[in-house]
Length: 71
Image 1: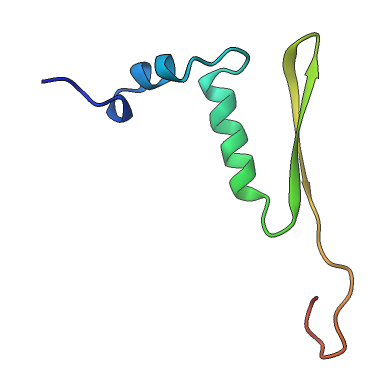
Image 2: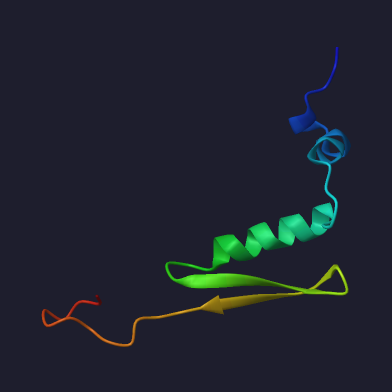
């Protein structure tokens, strides 16, 4: 009986054929994207062809509408 790639992490990573990112980096990017909230950005900073930094930017509305609710 063969194991599905979804249940075998090594097979899943092999099938993804990642060229620049490690599985750990992909996981960290996914975590940051899930943390960003309603407004935000995740920036990947590449130096010399390698991922060096990941910046997470969160934004918040600075004003409320006339009815007292955030726009």
